[in-house]
Image (tube, rainbow, N blue to C red; front, side, top):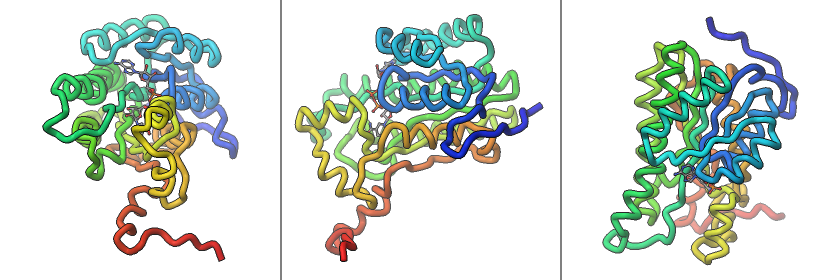
Length: 274
Ligand code: NAD
């Protein structure tokens, strides 16, 4: 039996996930941390699963949840993690896959080391797949659950990130496959494609001179960077019963980056200042 949708207040915080256990990989920082905060504020019990156990513990403690050390690039560890969390907290109803890395400097394809390629693959794609399998198969057996993966606009358009972009495109494909695979089992699988989000990972890239904040802002229709909480609120919607008919979708959360970029050859976006 599917649970009845539950109420929430106008600000987006409320008890709609009351009684549900949510696992957030990469929940120690950035988008994952924001997702854990929003899910906890809306009633979920959160398990923060991250390779950074120290910060995972800080986040978990603040939210009344629990922290778990995990390296998502080791598939068998995810199976053990799912077993451990379900034994300690109970059946997991919600999964956010936010563990991920940015590729680093954008280089020509012939200059991209294959160990960088393999690392991005192992964490961003295979790690997402392995977490989906470990938790999703348990949800499917119980015939209830929702999964949210983090893709990227870099998976929807070409960028000079020759490892990161194709892996994110594959996360969109993985999401569609698993949504079809588990649809009859009551498990929904969706993903978000954020534009540039002001998280510690991106701030680090800005500090190192690898990315230009002004250019990123100018590339978006709204002229703004995405904030982690804006991604988290979209994630909470897709995980909630309010999205009960939505599965297999990829939702951009990009302040209009995708719609704005083709304006460059027409002289760019208009400022409308008058
Ligand atoms: P972040 O670095 O702030 O947080 C990522 C978290 O994942 C960290 O806590 C880190 O310890 C953890 N992590 C990294 N590798 C791990 C591993 N092997 N096992 C377990 N945990 C691991 O990054 P973020 O910007 O919040 O990114 C989160 C996700 O969102 C990533 O998948 C990223 O690709 C995606 N994304 C980010 C942006 C952006 O602009 N920041 C845009 C689009 C998509």
